[in-house]
Image (tube, rainbow, N blue to C red; front, top):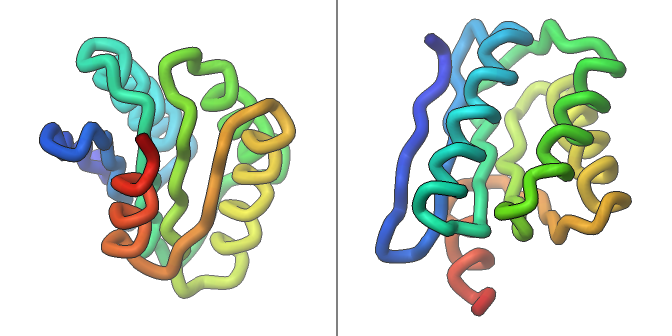
Length: 124
């Protein structure tokens, strides 16, 4: 398993952190687990931390499908994406964020988790 789900209960945030190698199935499993935890805890704020990824095995359609799937999650409203250093992965994150935003989610991209948490904390 190349992902970890963290609960910032005090701040009402669920965080998914990916590590290498993260294959397509890991992304889907992580998303399912994060959405389930958000539903159980009634949390509407999610961080996708991709800062540890150096490569991507996801196709453009995979990225679109993941963004669309997250956009359908009724409990999740605010999504913070933490960019990796790798440019291809950054493009994928930006694309997924656009897919989510176009479907009504409030999204932002960040260079680090700390800034993502600060933004999510500022939302009431």
